[in-house]
Structure formats: structure tokens, C-alpha cells
Image (cartoon, rainbow, N blue to C red; front, side, top):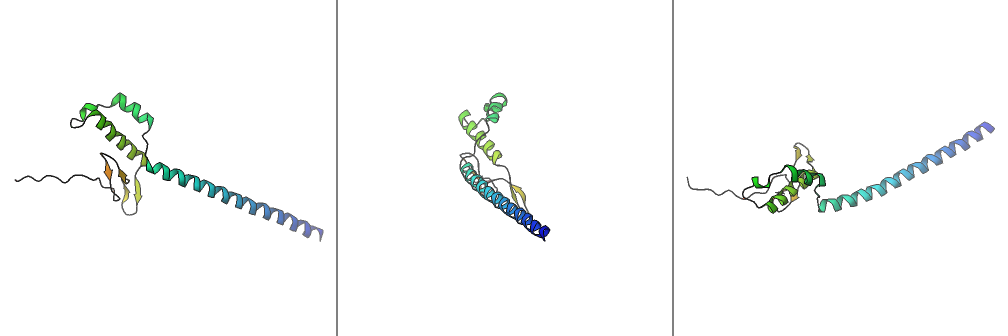
Length: 125
């Protein structure tokens, strides 16, 4: 009889400890989920350019190669490219991967991942 009572006490202690551990893990998971959700929503509003990219661009980029744009405009365009690249591709079923939705001065993509461009001028042939 004493063995049965001792087994019940041990079983209750293990059950209580397991239950409290599971509740603690779920609570910490909820806190982390809220934290990452807020940080993701704030990060989506302003994509940032990696500082390493800027130093690499200063060394190896030729801003004069963009003949139709001023160097300041080229920097804005390249910053938008880097910011879009830091967002990464989006996975879509049946499509695999597509460009993310991005709205910039020189680079804009819609929800389908297509770049917004101007209509071509048709000349009389």
C-alpha cells in the first residue's frame, strides 16, 4: 500500500511539473510571437540597406554608367534594389518564387511581382 501511495505522489509531482513547464513554454512562445510580429510590421514599413553594401558600392560601382540619371538618382535606385533584395523573394504556390511587393521612387512591383513600367511609345512603322 505504501508503494502505491508513493507512486501516486511521484506521478502527481511529475504531472504538475510537466504541466507547468508546458504552460511556461506556451507563454514564452506567445511573448516572442508578439515581439516578432511587431518587429516585422515595423521593418516592412521601411526596408533598410545593409551598410556593407554601401561600402562595397563606393569601391566598385560606376555611377557614370547610368548615363540617363544623375549620381544622386542612381544612389536612390541602387538603394531601392538593395532594400528589395533584403526583403527577399516571396513563395507562392504553383509559381514558386516571385518578387516582393515594393513601392519606391524608381523601382515598384505590384502584388503579382511584376514591375510597374511606363507604356511603350508606339511609333508609326
